[in-house]
Length: 165
Image 1: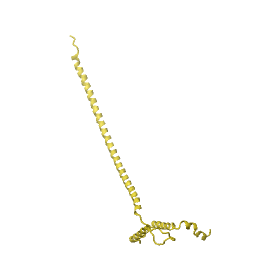
Image 2: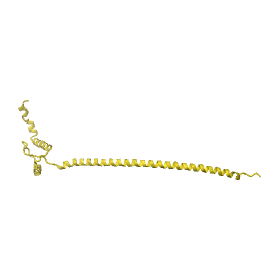
Image 3: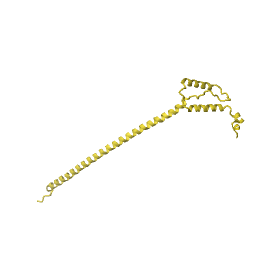
Image 4: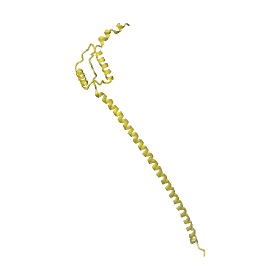
């Protein structure tokens, strides 16, 4: 196609969307402005004026515009939309901090458990050694008791034998 034919507006497009073109351009301009870093020259008073003008414009009925406005339109700042994202980030940060604290507590409890288990194992070893020692003493006492019993029986045997006279 030739250049003039490409640039000529189509009659179908003019019939279909004369009004949405202006809001679309405004939206694109707003998106570009939001993507750009704010200028240091813009004062808080200018921002307030822009916001109040936008609020007043929203209350007016929409008028079809044949050409886009070239005045300095700025998007309305919505702080409520940014708060949920910040809140979600805060919640995630809070959960991560809590998770780290719980992991640290778990690590401390595991160390305490290991320490208690080693202490209990040592106590059990000492008790088993003491029990083995006591059982050894009891075996010695039984042996001595058996020895005394044998001696007593040997000494008492002549007394209980029947006398032959």
